Image 1: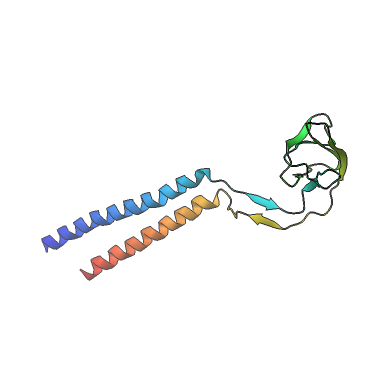
Image 2 (image 1 turned 180 degrees about the vertical axis):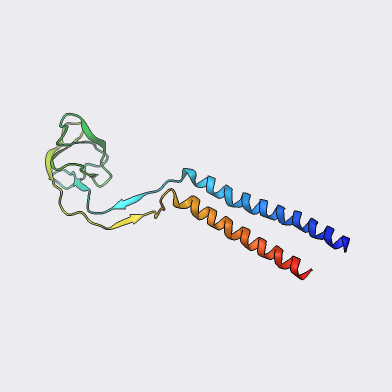
Length: 161
C-alpha cells in the first residue's frame, strides 16, 4: 500500500509537469501575436483619379499631391500614381479637394474634386479581429478548460487505483 501511495505522489509530479508544459505552450503563442499586423478594406469611401495624356497613355509613377479644403497650402497626401496612372485618397471633410499630378516636364493635371458626405458603403473586407480585451479572456478560458480536464483525468485515475 505504501508503494501505491508513493506512485500516486510520483504521478502527481508528472501531472504537475504536464500542466506546467501546457501552460507554457498556451502562453507563448499569445505573446507572439502582440505585434500582429491587420488590414481593412473599406469600399465606397475613397476617391480614385486616373491621370493620362491625350493619347490615352497613363501618367504612370508620377508624383501627386492632394490638398484638403481645410488646408489648401499643405498637402494632405503625397505619393506616386500606380502603373495605370491611378491615385486614390479618402476625404475626411466635405468640400473641394485639389489634386495635382505633374510630370517632371511640367505636364499634368491640377483639378478640384467635390467631396461630400454622400452615402458610404457598408461593405468591408479584411482581417477579422477581436477587441483587445477578448483575447486574454479567451486565453484564460482555454487554460481553465485544460486544467479542469487534467484535474478530472487525475481524479479518475485516483478513484480507479
